[in-house]
Structures are given as C-alpha cells and as structure tokens.
Amino acid sequence: MKIQCITLFPEMFGPMEHSIMGRAQQKALFSFETIPLRNFAINEYGQVDDSPYGGEPGMVLRPEPLVRAIRHTKVKENAGKVIYLTPDGVPLDHELVLSLSKEKHLVLVCGHYKGIDERVRESEVDLEISIGDFVVSGGELPAMLLSDAIVRLLPGVLGNSASAETDSFVNNTLGWPVYTRPEVFEGKKVPEILLSGNHHKILEWKKAKSLKRTQERRPDIFSKLKTDTKFGIK
Figure 1 (cartoon, rainbow, N blue to C red):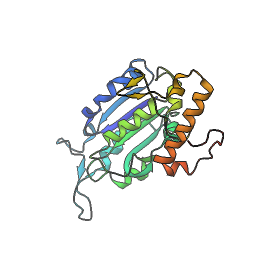
Figure 2 (cartoon, rainbow, N blue to C red; figure 1 turned 45 degrees about the horizontal axis):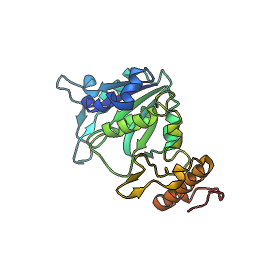
Figure 3 (cartoon, rainbow, N blue to C red; figure 1 turned 90 degrees about the vertical axis):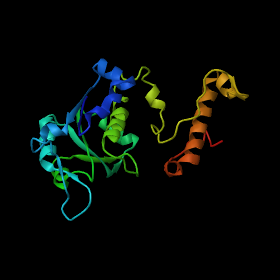
Figure 4 (cartoon, one colour; figure 1 turned 30 degrees about the horizontal axis):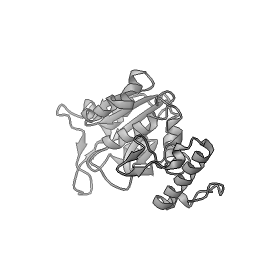
C-alpha cells in the first residue's frame, strides 16, 4: 500500500517514522510520503490560500495548488482514492478502516484554516472522513490516525496477526479487561478464571465482559447487537 499526505506541515508527520508504523515501512509493508502543498504554490511567495468569498473570517486553501498536488500523485491513474479529512465527513469506524486497508493507493488531503475550496471537493475527492464530532487545527493529526488504523490491519504489520482480531470494534463490541504480571498488585488480584487454564471458561468470561463493557459504555453499539445468550451479560 502507498499512502501520501498533502500537507502544509510535513514536519508534523515525524511519528510515522516510529513504533509499528516505522517498522512496517522498514519492512516495505507499506510506503508513506508527505507532499508539501507549498511546492505547488501560485506564486514565488508560497501562497496557497486566500480569503473566502462572502466576507467570512479566516482563510481557505485555493484550488489550483491542491489540484496540482493531487494530480501529481497520479492516484487516479493508479485506481486509488483521494480522501479529505474534514469534520463534516462520514464518521470513521472499523468497517471503513477495514475497507480502506484493501486499497493500494491513498492520498490524504490535510485541510487548514476554514478548509479547502468546495470545487476541489467536488472534482477530486472520493471520500470525506471525520474522526469525531470536534475540530482540530488541521488535517495532519486526523491523517496520521487514519493511516495508523489502516496500516496495522495490513498483513505482516503486527507481530502477532491475531492481535488485531481481538481489538475493540472488530466484532462490534468493545474489548474485555486485560491483566498481566504481577498476579497481585496493591491488593488487587487477577481474576481467578484467567489463572485456571480452562480455555473454554476463559473464552466465555472474555465474551461476557466484552458484552457488559459494550452495554455500559457504548449503548448505541450494544443496541444493534444480536447477543449470544450462551454467554449472557454478567
């Protein structure tokens, strides 16, 4: 997979060189590149924005630099997708991430100020995504979140391929409580069932805890579940 991010601030993407993302690039499991938007500026002063029509305060990214930057990537020729990170996009969830992880080429457009010219959204953007009902200063952080979520689902990226299969949201439920050594910490003991070695009972416990946590913390998700009465909610 190839991911390219069109951005005013390529230096913000340093975290993509570390941890799981960094190792995945070193193993050539995916490639990541930033495309500095000012390389496509309309003049020698590096201008890429302008004031909005209609007298609204703030600035808007101009269409010419963005269109040139997007077309520079040749994403359309590669049958890839152009994604714009914006608060008024579709909500990001696991199913969408899973779908995008099957793409070969993604170009992420990082907006700033009041956003990007609507004509670019109409002519160049294939999908608009929101990471939540809030606003941040630019699209760089959302682009990194999206990239991380996608890349960790690629084959070979996680050391234990089964790890992602037990993440929250994979089965439309939240994860269950997890424990590690020491067995007793500040008077609190690991649940006996996890020490029993009875894998069937442990699986039942995990599923029940997962359902209970989903019911308590995300009733919106829980209400859509067809729960397995074998495990119950305890």
